[in-house]
Each structure stands twice: as structure tokens, then as C-alpha cells.
Image 1 (tube, rainbow, N blue to C red):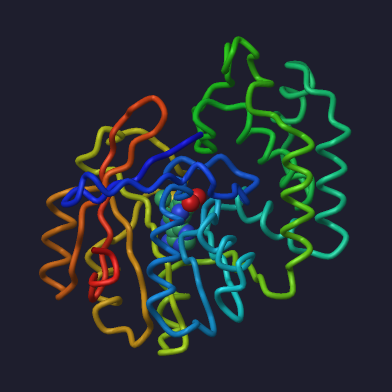
Image 2 (cartoon, rainbow, N blue to C red):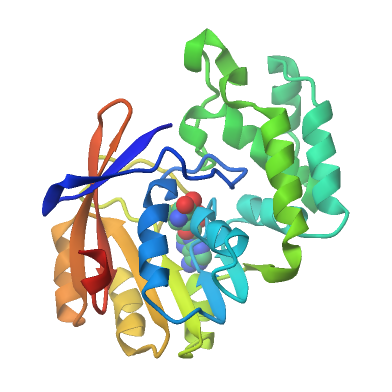
Length: 290
Ligand SMILES: C[S@@+](CC[C@H](N)C(=O)[O-])C[C@H]1O[C@@H](n2cnc3c(N)ncnc32)[C@H](O)[C@@H]1O
């Protein structure tokens, strides 16, 4: 999807991010592909990080881009969700990534076959990874949280197949697997990882779940959607690590940022459907962003 990005305080400055390479196997609600050009600006204004960590990774597009573009010595993705974790673990394990790519290429996508896979329980990690990607690409909005229905009509009337691109998915998986020596995954809690990696050699990109006050309020985008935002800001205020935080544009978040001595800027994003959204970028110093 072609996306344009503007800074609200400079609406004439539009960055066309249609050329941003899609690296993630997930279609992720709240995915940050559109933010990638600003990530380049942010990292470019700093010393090369030794360790780049994405603690609420989801589809992990920012961490993946940093790893592929070799912008840090090592990248770590962190995610609490079991299903998402199964995918990352499988992709970055030698042999398993190739198994997943081939499983996807060979799958015959019919409603019956999809339902048969989605009903399965107690799967080993790699089968769970396949089930997760299948669900992610056949459910409304890519939502993995309980309650999301299958795409009935999908795009162009193609139903459940409208987002299933086996060759593309397999290629992305093989590409990620090929850089596994500079990519790690932790199935764990973002708060613990942030606290354990309090070091000037570390850089965090932090994109926590947040729905309060937004149009998506009340909807379940993620299985793990509850985060203590006050606690997150308190930890970040004290950390010696560098970080960039993104949030929904919400007054409560702006107040938290101000209370903890951080700067914020509203950025606007417009997609090809001309839907305008704004989000907040929060940092100790936003000189690089404006
Ligand atoms: C807004 S999404 C991240 C989207 C991501 N930036 C992308 O581009 O795809 C937030 C993610 O944080 C995860 N999450 C929630 N609580 C967590 C926690 N305590 N530790 C680690 N991950 C958590 C959710 O499962 C969800 O995948």
C-alpha cells in the first residue's frame, strides 16, 4: 500500500514511503512500516547502536529493517504472545525457517483446509507458526486475538485468498532466516527486557499496545493488550539507553510524556484510501524529527 507521511506542523513536507521494503511475514494491526523513513532519520542522527531491541515487536518491521540495513550490531525482537513468538522462533532457527517456507508454498488454500488447520490445538512450535501466519492472513485485519472472523469477501472478491501470497511469504521467511546471526528473539515480557538492558550501548524502539481514547477503543487487536503505561514512562525516564516511543495520539499519553520530561511530536499518515491518522513520536529530544 502506498503511504504518505507528513509532519503535522509542516504539512507540505510529505515523504512517500511507497518504496519502503515490506520485510515482515505478518500483516500487523498497528504495524509501523509507514514509520520506517523516520526511523532512518532517528538512527542516522545517533551513534550506531550496539544492541537494538524492539520490546513490543508484533510484526517487528522496525527491528527487521534495522537488521537488514545493518544499522546496529545486533537486533532483538521481544514479544509476549505465544502465537507470534512461535513464528519468530521458527523463522530464525536453522532448518525450521526453510520448513515453514516450504509448508506455506505447498499449502492448498481452501476454506476447508484453512478451517482444519485453525481448529488444531497443542501444536509443536513450527506447526503453530504455520497456523499463526495462516490465521494472520485469512482473518479480518490480520487480528490474532480471539473473536476475529475469516475474510469472507476479502479484497477484489478473492475471499480468504486475498491476503495469502505464498511465494512472497516464503521469500520473506528465507530472507529473515538468512540474517539470523544478527537477529535474536525473546519470548518474554517487554518490561523485564527493558530493565535488564539499561545501558548506553542499547537502543529501544517501543510501540506498546494502546487503544484508550482512540477509534479502536474496546476492540481486541492483541491478546496481550494491557500495559501499565505509567510504569513504562517511569522506567524510560531513568534508563541510560536511547529509545524512541510511539503511541496513539491521546491527551493522557501527552501528559505522561510531559510529566516524565520527554518531548512529543504529532505525525500524520495518509494511506491510499486517504484515511488520515495521527500518532505520537516521543523522545528525550526530537530535534532530529523536525
Ligand atoms: C502495537 S503492537 C506492535 C506492532 C509492531 N510495532 C509492528 O510494526 O508490527 C504491540 C505488541 O506488543 C505485544 N505485547 C503486549 N504486552 C507485551 C509485553 N508485556 N511484553 C512484550 N510484548 C507485549 C502485543 O502482543 C503486540 O504484539
